[in-house]
Image (cartoon, rainbow, N blue to C red; front, side, top):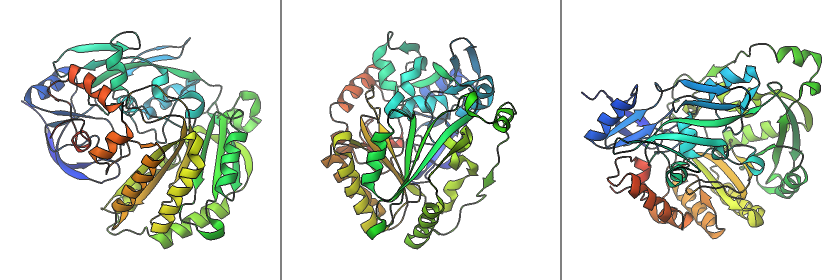
Length: 450
């Protein structure tokens, strides 16, 4: 008998929402039973923002009970684990032993299966690429019930279609990937307070060889003489010799996270042009050009400090819009996007710009260029404005990130991923001809039929 709970479900952005049948299978046999009855939508911790891991058809199969470490080679840093293992699990277990993920997104509440399905990237993409660059192999349960191991050498088409494939090729059971050797949990942190876009793009280039990690916070509400102001943050993993005696002692102690929480959804939106402008002004004014050390938790996961921070967007939720633009026209395109957002007046206080490098993959989001990510409260005019941003992205030969998306239409998606989605669909049909693995996102953008 199939066991599930029927609830209203959404991604982390809380938009859109749908009635879904949610289950947490403990193993392969339960997932096979789900497949016999109809469609299955794989889901990890639900941190994709839109509708990639929700559906009003079939069953949502969360991987959270499939969360065991299988093996670890201390000499090579090669880890094997089930797909439900989270970044937090990995960090809590291995950082104290001197190992760290090569690539991490901006939250540690992401599963390994989700990292593969989204081919997550971080602040170091321009130097080291996305999660798939360090993925060795994985095992996938197909809609037929067969379990296939795939890698760059074996069943390579399935390997590359699953990476960035949003969980639509099969259920990822476990994976083997490499971790990075580190000396301590601290990061060198260089902060530059900059007045405009030109200065930012110049500094990106100036420090490209010196730092593995780089990201810029941007004020996308400010206009006039304040337009384009930003804070660039650069970092490397610290060596033991870099730390003073106090930090050397602290680096050997067990790290204790400090959290605050937004315990309930705010019934109305407190986010408007005035409140966001005040926040951005205070954030920029407080910032100082400096160099110091930060614990990796503060450096990589500042928003994880606030549990359920998405509640501040009220019940209406938020749209996370992330674009990637080719490098040679990056500044021009970003300038055009920012002016459109400023004109609309619906700016975000969580806008970040990063540099991207080359990336293998079929539906993987990254390519060499610049990526800008913004949060917008769901309110009147926002979706129309985002559609206008889509037009700018297409004009400059860019694309948006499916993991963050909640509004992309089929025609625009296929223009952004032209030459790629066709290849992906051939592989999808080969391994899942009946479209047993689906989602609301897949139907919305034409990767699965209605």
